Length: 352
Ligand SMILES: *Cc1c(COP(=O)(O)O)cnc(C)c1O
Image 1 (cartoon, protein in one colour):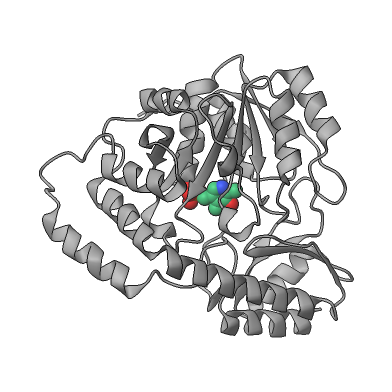
Image 2 (spheres, protein in one colour):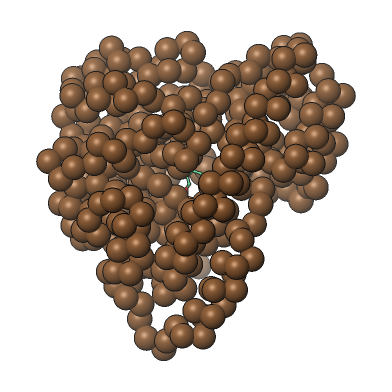
């Protein structure tokens, strides 16, 4: 039997994988450490009885989109939903990318922007950032002029560095953009400002959000884009028919009823983040300020991957970013529950 070889260019990059190790304290993928409210689960179970599983789902996800539109004060035609924001990114690349087209990313940033672009046959033009990881507007202008990207990806707050882009920064990127500016706000609820306030049918700007982080629903795989109605129409052309199942549509719609409890979880994480940063001050490491639910840090005396392994020995899994471009020696820790953070800080103190 001879099987065909997969596309040769797939071998060029490793898949985007975070090791899923069974450990007591999992602080490696920026999920919420807390489950969604029990009342949400109860409502969802009720809803389950009403779903007609022999029928295809509502193809346009009209109730979910209407609920999201009301939540953000936009029109339902300006909302596109998908199976996680990664599928939103894929849809953007399928609709706007392809052979001969480029997207722009500014490293270090979320690896999946360039990875998904690559999978869709779209080239990724990679620019750098300032040394403090803030966006370098001269560099953005240089990449935009040299590469003419059809999509310019920003990530705010930026994963894995934690900094958010300011309104003037996003404004300046928009000003010079030859194509669509996409702001990935997977951690948007942790930041003081959102580019959602700039969404307009006449402006080439789209914002991506997800239920995976602040909404405590990573297991549901639901994300969405808010942007000009014409962008949404373009994304609908590349989405598979009925790509969003009935259960997920209900799960997302019901989650929005618990926005207050989501905000409480965000507030707890922010308090814990500040507590971890305060504890870091007396440890031999460099930490970057964060407007998110994770912290990037670089151990001072020991190598990043050794510290990562030492933490794992003590039952704490963080993200080893030490081999990522521009992040030599760095690790990223997700803020967990107070108990998890205590265990992380104790383990880190021992290892260092
Ligand atoms: C976690 C994360 C996502 C989430 O992707 P989903 O597919 O919605 O789970 C998107 N963008 C960034 C920057 C992230 O860190």
